[in-house]
Image (cartoon, rainbow, N blue to C red; front, side):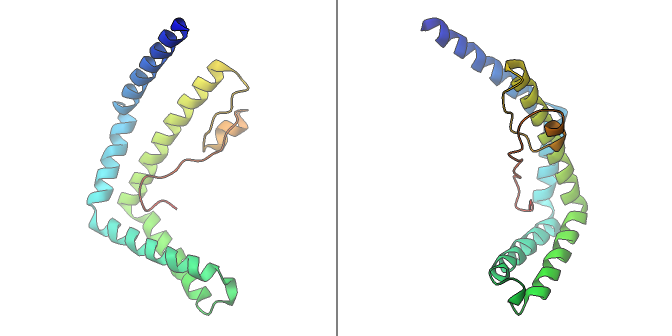
Length: 148
């Protein structure tokens, strides 16, 4: 039992070292810079707040579907707000940095899973890994309010 405990500690130590390498990587640095720029950009924050409010209205309208009197207007407003949000330079840069970070984490997860067994299911949000014979697909959550 003692060997298993020492082995477990060694594995955890190596996992911490890997996590430190990821945190100190260029990809993580760019993610943090993009996140900071997003939080500092007043226009982006206003667009995000507007989109969140519209999303609440959208959810309310969705309960009744196309029979709701404001259905078309709300649907149009949500699409326009989403497009404006997606095209905003700071938001787009953050989403790109977020995607790069997620891809790195997905690749690491796949490498670790395959090292254990070809049959280990590895959660990724990237369809590339699924088509390459890897299991997964549980998604990649976003850390900011603008993620839909």
